[in-house]
Amino acid sequence: MTEAGLTTEPTAADHHAENVAKLLRMAGQIADFFKAYPEAEAIASIADHINQFWTGRMRGDFLAAFADRPEDLPPLLRQALLRIRPGRGG
Figure 1 (tube, helix red, strand yellow):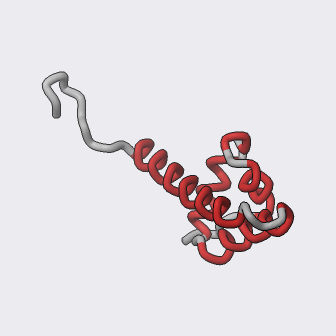
Figure 2 (cartoon, rainbow, N blue to C red; figure 1 turned 90 degrees about the vertical axis):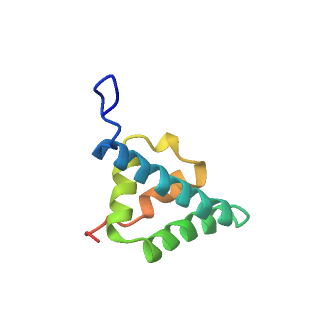
């Protein structure tokens, strides 16, 4: 506890926000890699990479975080969002 009586322990909301930020950073790196490809191929490749290498929980958390705010994503990633399979757990 601090002098003001506030806790400095991270909350579940803090952890969730950190997780979403990490997933966004990872997805952005994937999108950056494929941005030199023709647009249709880049979109398919981004979604394919995420579907193959991310766990179901990662995909589910990512989709849930950006389903209502896809405008927060870079353009290629925004277009790939609809091709990312929902998660079925870990």
